[in-house]
Amino acid sequence: MTVIIEEPMSSEVEDEREEKPALVPSMFPHIPPTLYFSTDNERVELLPLEQRHLLKWKMSSVTPNVVKNTITRSNFKVTKRSHDWLGCWGHHMKSPCFKAIREYQKLNHFPGSFQIGRKDRLWRNLSKMQARFGKRDFGFFPRSFVLPQDIKQLKKAWEDGSSRQKWIIKPPASARGIGIQVIHKWSQMPRKRPLLVQKYLHKPYLISGNKFDLRIYVYVSSYDPLRIYIFSDGLVRFASCKYSSSTKSLGNKFMHLTNYSVNKKNSEYQSNSDNTACQGHKWALKALWQYLGSKGVNTTVIWEKIKDIVIKTIIASDPYVNSLVKMHLRSPYSCHELFGFDIMLDENLKPWVLEVNISPSLHSNTALDVAIKGQMIRDVLNLAGFVLPQRDDVVPSCSSASSSTSSVCGGTRERSRSDLSTDEKVKRAFYLSQRFTDQALLSSVLDVLTPDDVRVLAHTEDELCRKGDFERIFPSPTSSRYLRFFEHSRYLNILLDQWGQKYSQNESKGIHLLKTLCQKGVHLGTSDPAHIWSKSSYVPRQELSRSSVVVSHSRRFPPDDDDFSDREIQSVTSSLPDISLMDSPGLSRSSSPGLSRSSSSSPSPGPIFTQSLPPKDFI
Image 1 (cartoon, helix red, strand yellow):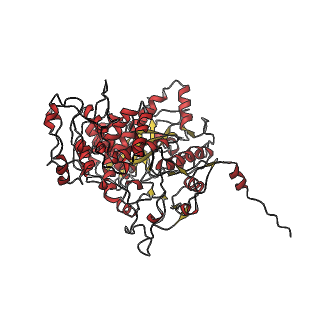
Image 2 (cartoon, helix red, strand yellow):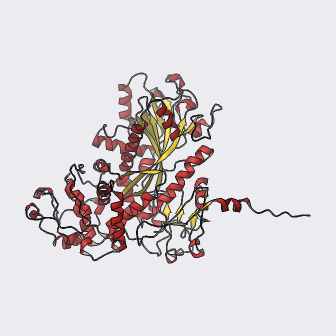
Image 3 (cartoon, rainbow, N blue to C red):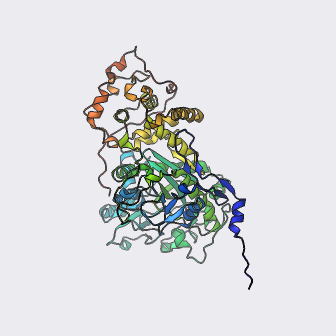
């Protein structure tokens, strides 16, 4: 018998692919590189064996193939152990379970993100924002009621409506269209189970007579500071039956629901594998923009409105997520999240948010799915900024049990908020204690950059360089207008906002400054007075009235900085110049060379910072 040995095709193909370095160097000196994730036409070089042993990924029953393929190309190996993995793409967990995540590990969820990921919580939180800021800023979601709590309000709204009104009912925590109905009679309303009831958008924008919605992919790399990215492409999902507003058709799910999992069961469903074609019942988002553009529609306006909705919706979850991150996580490095926003356009092309998915489907059944989701996941993992830990940091589990709730047992802890110097805490407390809209004082946050300021700014600039086909929408040069929507103002949001305003038109200048500071090792800690805020002569460039700038040693600072010690703050602020002297015309602010900010001829208004108690209705 003759045995024929064939060389594997994969090695030949691999040799033809472009080789990429396994590590992406930082733009800045003395900052570690991040792991590189490739597309399928690239191959990633092998790291030395000792480092390669660290490339372990914890697989979950819900880890999609598109993630498995991407990590495999970067030479990750699958592990089932609880302590030595670097990354995991899995289920959302109850908040206390996040305590088990080690400093060098990343999970694809934030604690508390269900505050917008559950339908009932999303509408509760957006309704709070609408009550506080009005429909002009938060009028992008249908009128909603959560049953059974809101049954009386719903009954009144129903009685006040017309005889032809339609409502859509949804289970609060379901997915894939399960349990959704459109009704028009009060007698059709279920009574004995929790439900979200929404006014039905009965006049959607139609294409060839069919209703559709948009799946928009949104990535949040950090909540403090908040950094939000939106993917340039997405999916357009069509109902597979032509739309009718007749009440007789309300039972037809193929007409009124756009979920792929529902419509694929229709014998008339037409698939589409071409991400450039406007055909079938699933398109690429870019194909939709091209189609609408050919009809004379200004798609840029629609896209800007969608970005506005995304930013405001994420901000609605900010107080819950940040409180839980500080409560349950050893390091903020350990969480990142991809959201799937479902958006519908009405007959006037106004976008409405229908729901937010914290585990958006990444199944790739067609070439269209692969083209969009494959590139997106590669970009998500590059944005996440996975860093190889030191070998000694990856320690064995404390006990023989390898449960997901094993206790802390070692490792080098990433420097975090609790490691801030007293000087850095005082600087943060000062800017968070202001209740005014003076841009000159806000801009002064850049005049003395502390070590932590430099670290955050350098990390933010490095991250932006890895964005791929994502666009960062917060912070941005124009995002100051969103700061007033935060329940608690956050120092790092102010810092990044002012950095963007100053350097967005001259990015190379900002990069050069950070390179210089990192070369000096400022981000690693310094005794240089030029980077110690409390040792500077703090006098704003413009004269400020005594009443507009007050540092009170006895007041409690906002919840963002509730671990500041009053004694620490007093010990440093006692050496600060008397703020009453700021009105003296002979005083001018001294700042470190290269860090001063020139006055803008048309400064954008800053936020009004307010304080309130932390939220109590999260888990």
